[in-house]
Amino acid sequence: MPVGAELRSDGEGTLFRVWAPQRRTVNVVFEGGRKAVELERETGGHFSRCVSGVRAGTRYKYVLDREDPFPDPASRFQPAGPHGYSEVIDPNAFPWSDGDWKGVRLPGQIIYELHLGTFTETGTWNSAAEKLPYLRDTGISIVELMPVADFPGKFGWSYDGVQPYAPASIYGRPEKMREFVDRAHSCGLGVVLDVVYNHVGPDGNYLPHFSPFYFSKERKTDWGPAINFDSEQCGPVREFFMENAAYWIREFHLDGLRLDATQDIYDTSKPHIIGEIGRVARKAAGPRSIILIGENEPQNTDLIRPLDEGGCGLDALWNDDYHHTAMVALTGTAEAYYTDYRGTPQEFVSAMKYGYLYQGQWYKWQGKRRGNSTFGLPRQSMITFMQNHDQVANSARGRRAHELSAPGTFKALTALTLLGPGTPMLFQGQEFGASSPFLFCADLKPALAKKVREGRIEFLEQWRSLKLPEMKACFADPGDVETFKASQLDFSEVEKHQETYLMHRDLLHLRREDPVMSRQGEDGLDGAVLSASAFVLRYFSPGHRNDRLLIVNLGIDLDLDPAPEPLLGPPASTEWQTLWSTEDPRYGGCGTAPLDSEENWKIPARAAVVLHPVPLSLE
Image: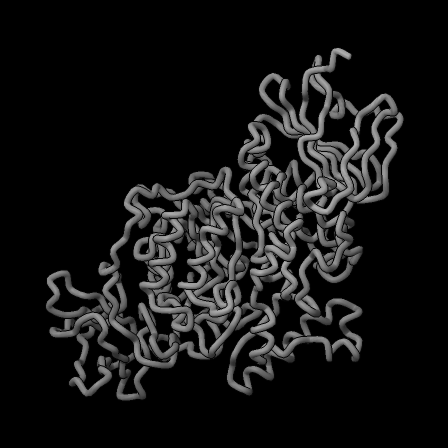
């Protein structure tokens, strides 16, 4: 790496290199009394020296101009947390067994977002690895890890990382993360890591001690100063974060990255830093295929257009529009950032066909235009979800969608989400209707904790009802360990909530195995509104001989008579038959009578039904 502590290939020592352009002297000091060593200044502001006798496991810090010692900004591990000594790590010592693993490509994937600390009771790499066969058998193909960059405290939701290269010590040592990835690959699962390149956490951020140029003087984010990617002395900063992306891919065999809040990654230079991050990450993967996913609140689809067309070359973006319209349909609530959605059949048809609902139209909630065109982009480039860490935690009680909705409506929209042409994503526990909430949590120092509590209250006040004084007592304290523990999954609920789990598992099997649904609309997709609460999607097949219909009704029983809608007509010499239904008794339903009969179309209430053509009966 261009910075950090790098073991020499001959085993005779370690090269220490750090960027500190305004410092006069930099010394590396060691835990245990070993004599400090002064690093040599290079042109450009780096300091470096190869120190003999320093082996893996040695712990060290840097002394800048005789100040108190600080951990290495590019530390590969912080055994005592981000304030402690850094440890020299040998990245080549782990015995990988995934030599035949080819990586992952986006088409056909099903993503599972996972927070390591609350996914299991012990919250470690080892305990999470034990659940990998379960995820595979459920139908998941990619595990998306929320950030693991080291942060202070004994718990947190992980977006306040301050050591971008160091896997958080509370989850286990770096080799345990490698074991997790290696085992995932043996189970046929890819692993994508969420990385934060828009800000650094407030406690344990030592980057400014090494250089004031790490952060922008002009631009700020909701979480503090933006990272300096395009102004004075930005070159080493760009290198630092580009190398970080390559590091995770190269040294941990990860199958991709999810870039957090890319709207707060500011760069006016060409090429854009996001495109450069993607380029070096793909290069680090070598012959393996990786996927790069972005979160972008303004819905800038240039991020997923090819580099040679002026885009940033990412593979996919999160589709918040779909989530927002789904939540309005599920809950009936259309305020705060749900203001510009109605949860109507037309919104769902449009989301399935085009991805984003807002592609340049006026957006009342923000008082400006939102989004740009998705035309010409592959449908799988839209990551589609009903829940994620942000949307569950950024609510009054951190409740899951199934607790806020009528059961039939939840099942119907689950079917739409998991069978739609986008790339579906489940949030941990969603597949079995977890009763545990997911709450924002952060174990911070008292003064910071107070500011975080106040900030959470202020954020939630965008919902009119949450401004009420009596509601403040309902907000969990982010700094209370019980808030963290309440969010831990209880896997005994897989059996207790078996109907919900079986529905999710069967839907994922249908998506993966059905010859038409598995193609994600590759042969064409169209939809039509049938009523104020019902709609149909038709998945075309070659020659239109084996099409599929997905009928979704979010309202009461619908007698569609007459039914002048061409998409409802079966292929020649066939009739429609139920292939799958949310009303299957295995899922707690009451059965599904034929939808199309001599009485015309009768569509059950709050249900989703998949139809396929079968030869006409001779009777």
